[in-house]
Image 1: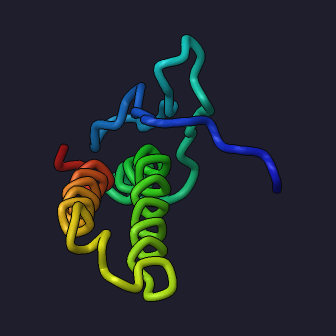
Image 2 (image 1 turned 30 degrees about the vertical axis):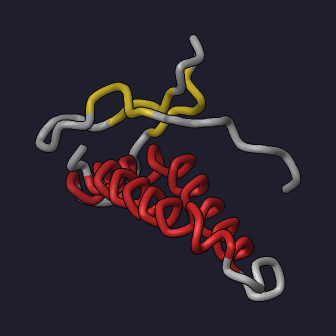
Length: 111
């Protein structure tokens, strides 16, 4: 698989209320849904949790890439004098941490 994914953020559309017929789709800001989620197996809360994780995937991928980039910048071979860490490096890491908490909240349904 070599293609790029549809950029986020993605959001859940449709009916994701436990106790009712579940189903819907994940959409972007584009006028068309990215793809449709039609739950087949699982309990209501499990299906809802899976849908939330799917909708958070683009942001999670972005945060993971930010962390990898940060680790590259702070490696001894790329920053032997710790100029990045002594500059904005730690602030950047805290921002990555904040973004991680936001993504986790979305994936867990707390946002």
